[in-house]
Amino acid sequence: MSDTYFDLAERLENSFPEIENDIIVDLRESNEDYMALRDKISDIENRNPFIEKTLEGSGDVHLTAEEHTVLTEYLRLRFGLDDMERLQIYFRGHTDAVSYLKKIKAL
Image (cartoon, rainbow, N blue to C red; front, side, top):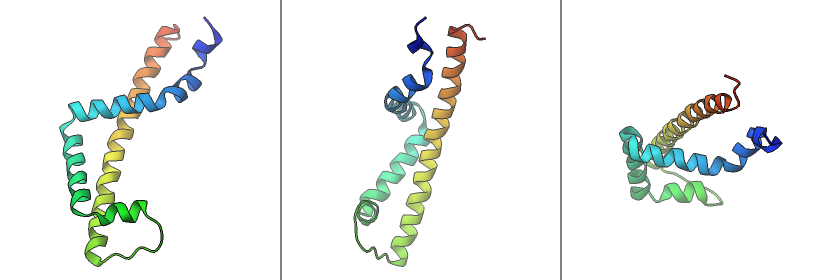
């Protein structure tokens, strides 16, 4: 086998964006909780344009107490969505590691 076959870390690093995209597409297609959370986040974003301005803009930011509450809830939901994605990546990593070890006959 070639040395590049065993350079798994580099191969994974190079293909990580595609792997991550595949995982997110799979979550969208098969996980109702994930999609419900995405829909809720999207709804909050659509109803509250100040969120994008706050997160993507520059300069001073001034929020009302109500906007602060909305932003806090939005961030809580986003962190939950990110957690779901990271968990799937973690599981995928374990699955891929076992497959790789079997392929190189280490298991």
